[in-house]
Image (cartoon, rainbow, N blue to C red):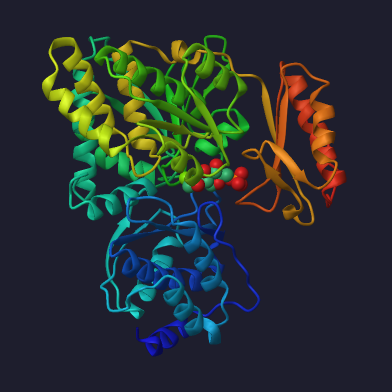
Length: 542
Ligand code: 16G
Ligand code: MG
């Protein structure tokens, strides 16, 4: 390790004095102008991780659904997964080291993790469409080369595409070809094979309006469109030619405001969906004949997918275990429907994809979705082989079902939640089952809910347990929430410190929108009083 070279190059990516950043739920995220040194140093860290795992490591430059002025970076582990927790700590240490301590921190990490410094390192890099991303990804490359690593810069990619590339490269091409072309071909082939089986239900139902949040999803969907156009025609909105990234559009906007994005022409009963800024989230929605807006979120996506998978398994006669993984944000109606009607076991984890992904790996088939639309289905390696074998061996109807299962498995991006891949799975299932978006939405009725934010002096005073559903500290807060919840019917509420913003998040649901709004407001007041609220007291805003 040529530490002299690191020090020399680091001088041109100097850390602003006193700036402290944390590797959070999805990597580092802040104003783009504060990130140059972090990018350089994540290039260094990726090289160490690559040497240690003897695998290709990914570095993605994006701030997802956050404002265009922000940016961020996260590392992708060998099987396309999020960076291992012990390395998140190293990332935080390295990002915050003062210039004179940089060498020591690198040596410490190498020793702690028994990194063989003679080993080769290979890094793949992707970035979103933010104006700051190109320069910042160049800083990552400077870091990689300063430590003698080799790299391939994919340039513009969706986050899930970078996960896919990493996964492909570390499984010697077994999963797919590590090119965008390979990604488009793999997904489109599985999609077209699946939809071929759908009884023709007219052109109308095979078209979809997509709000691309003015982000990378637009570019990539446009590139991919002609590969699957026989089975689905997509009409893109907010494609980045005019509007600003994530501004009044995108999956996060639609989910949190529960209204359509700007710039989308919606006719009644038309199926529409929104991606987020790096295309790893998707939510669906429509206007009914009375002009009412209906959101079909991650919970309903998980329900549609797990029901269909269960049906196929029944048809094949295989008793593989399917589990659905959610977070505390999952609508109570969805959990009830899955458990009581679908008879699928449901598990709850902390917020953040890495937690859901980890839990989903415990099942033969693990379907995980956050209510915000981030998720996928994972098939264990043994199950993958079994399904491929059944698709060859079984006869007639059973074989057809096994083949469909195989196609669905190929269509899911098993390295990460992926808006494009999820969209194609959903579209295929709707076509195969002949379901309209209204029929899908009618599987169950969401309980009215409300999310609010509260500003406090230090959000770390709130700690939680039971997958964030119970507050442990500050004293008295959980008791206060319990008392408030008792005042409403079918109600539930919880609070948690955000992992991406300096706020405390409040969630409430109840039997009516008024009750959910009022409960959320009362819980916000309890947080404000008991957890050191700052600024103006929360006002009832509905
Ligand atoms: C990040 C997470 C997302 C989570 C969100 C919660 C990943 C890739 N993304 O965007 O899963 O829902 O943070 O944000 O893990 P919050 O902690 O601010 O509520
Ligand atoms: Mg995202």
